Image (cartoon, rainbow, N blue to C red; front, side, top):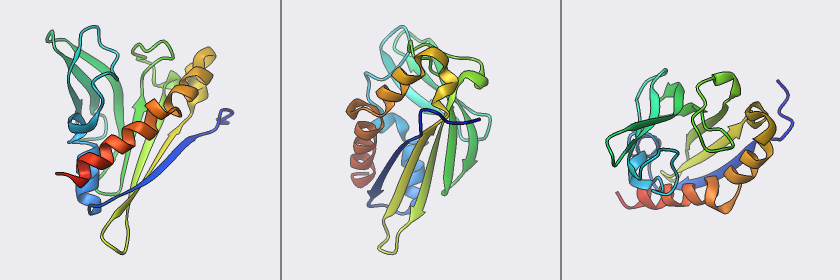
Length: 158
């Protein structure tokens, strides 16, 4: 499928080995994910990524409900993590993977002991008529750029 909108691509370097960087992005996601970034009906309580291909990416809300927002497609620690971004341009859950974009995160060890983290948010055109709005949102300062800065701070201060 042609990616007419282009892939949102972000790269940062963190002061951690690849295993720690991977774990902080996945198992530790609740430590850095912004509390304002959720699609649940109640305030965000906790963000969870299940640690296997096929696992859920979801949030637990403060009212006890759960809200899915993604699915783990590739679980390859400490090298690569891919998830379906099952969020519509209206910030609701999208059950159909054919209408979901993908986020791939690669962790590459650097000679100095740091890790380069490459994030690619692709297939945004799958979101349909609101795809351009989704592209703008995830490529904005409040999107992946800002979230990766929060992630970097968390990894650097375990």
